[in-house]
Length: 447
Image (tube, rainbow, N blue to C red):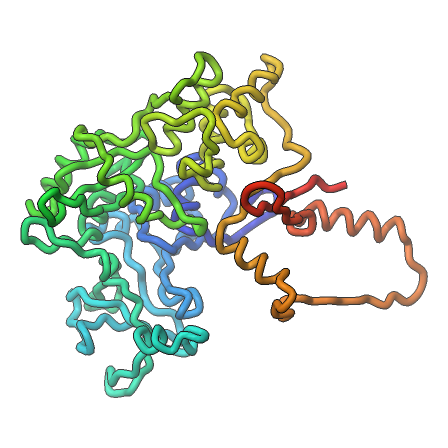
């Protein structure tokens, strides 16, 4: 797509960036610049990008929506990827100031505190929620001037040169055997290990109270959990070394492509004593031999599960749109069939997808897209849709327009132009249905 459309610059969330780097790193060929952010960067993935695309400018960006999206940026270098503290978040953009505070006190260079932002990009507050606004925004005297700041809840440190480094979330700390644990320290150390793409440190509830730390990570062709734990033992203080390291094929993700920490936390009590939550050869419960077993094993690997039932939809098992993309790529590798994402959404389960695959000719190299694609809407999109169709809905986003055309009109040319636009833009071919189950977006092929 980048090469065909002549795209020169792109922004991707970190999860999507990592996914494409894993599945097809050459897809970025032709870009002049790439911005990525939204979550802590993977040093190993960024290092691979720079090696594969040395002529493309890679920038790590940071900024919550309360600061109108972006607050800092950093042009990533090879040296940044070797930084033990992770790839820096960089310096503040024009019109924005970054402060690292301990309460109301400015931290010294290198001291970890809460990242706070000020400047013209700050929003006025949260609509209809003065309490939340008062808790997140306040006025402080900093650098000899009274500034209105936003408290991000992120922790970080500023170097003597004014470069911002990320140090995790303030609300994710926990204690293990009397020691205060900052998950970001463990995660940053794990991301320095070659082959580890993502790492999340979570507490494991102890039977008698308290927590035991663990690191969950996933990698396509990376080191074993024993190797990762050995590296962490060399790099971290003993109280930060995780009690267990768990291999996952993929992290559960939210609809915005960020890691779903709540879903990970729900898995923690069920982790096996061996520290493995996913095998590379998981099978479906009750799966038949042949195609169904192969599909079940791919489902299990992508979802990070030991086994998957053959009659439960992929989404209900914890999958998402990025997982569907990964599933299609793995099915292509395993079976030599290019399965379109629309087919996965249509089939949903192992058994139905396997049955469809069995109907294809043996020499079918790839499949075409289905005539209709039905995709369940994420919760926030479904709520937005229902608010829009309510009889008392705000009409702010309704944009009626009419054009008056003077002179002769070539109806055939106009029709062809409109059809071309409709084909190029999926939104013009989308409609929303709720017949059985959750509301879904239905995308039809262009006429």
